[in-house]
Image (cartoon, rainbow, N blue to C red):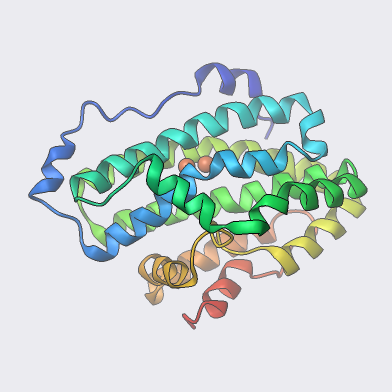
Length: 263
Ligand SMILES: [Fe+2]
Ligand SMILES: [Fe+2]
């Protein structure tokens, strides 16, 4: 399950949508629930660079394979946020630098101290922290990919489907990197397994929950994972997490559905 970082770096690319007629959304509008979900997803994709800030102050920055990946990963995620913003704009939803600036300002002092806290904790842990980072990445990418796949099924809009499938295709490569890294690093170190399990149990929340307001998290989870099919998808993600060394039985995604009042 080796991942070739060099080949990823030379083939990573800006998501293209210039061949798609996004104008069609002006007449064939998405549902209000879908737009609210898109707003969430775009905000979180756009926030990737801020997550990257918090990761480069940890031991992860000393591993050149990891930093090569993160450089291009951040680039691809940026364009995911951009295309989702274009869809929102077609519906008259305000986007752009002012919106993003307001979101980052809203995060307040906790956001300002986050790199210091993360740096202190991660450097005390040492190189085993990288296993936790890679596992977190794998789980978040699994959730993101599942989220886009569910979005396609729930909204059933052909043009949106095309966009989301293009994004999801790139997410599968992100999954491949994090998954191979996490698996190897967890298998090599019992201490990494213990620390990662502890961190996930006590600190993990659904993607974006650290930056989005509670009503938006609840809406997203309800829209994508509400109902029987959604719950089945959540359990499929949990089953994938179970296969990582030392991480069986955590039920992280299902726990999030309960925590945010869905179950
Ligand atoms: Fe993305
Ligand atoms: Fe991704």
